[in-house]
Image (cartoon, rainbow, N blue to C red; front, side, top):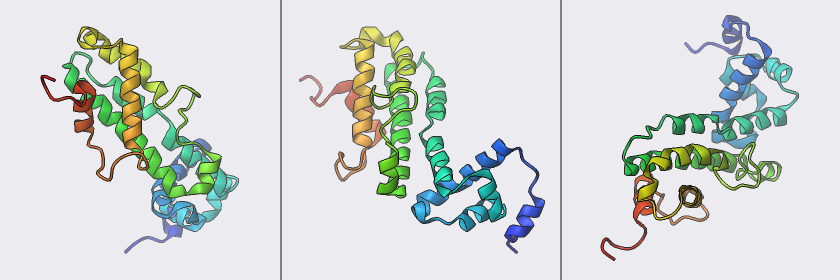
Length: 204
């Protein structure tokens, strides 16, 4: 039998305030993807296994909780960690494919989340802004990591490493945006091949 909210709350172990806030944010993100901003604090409390009043002790209101969820979704830390785990000694083709897959997943996830929230939240938050690096374009915070990955292959590149990274991140970003791409979703593997070889057939 499914436990009630009170039963889950009674069994929940005590948490420090920051830990409690983080657990509520973790619970609300999938709810926001499913229901948008119409999600209620009762639904949030049920998903987090806490009493509804605990939500308001952790956050001033639902807007503050939504802001915290947006900040977590847009935080580039997890993306940077994945990029840093790519082996720089791999062949160039394999590195490009892994980098493209990581960056494509990041922007697709952010866009999906912000779309679920609706225009009101778009007015308060820009999904195109990279935290800590305003004004430098999409994935700016990842540029240094990707440059280090491509540096061992600079002799194989037709352009300087920094330019190659700029082109890569612009293409990944553009093809991940639903209002810019064709009706068929972009396959990161095909995009990786395009980045490496362009639109001309072999031998052209």
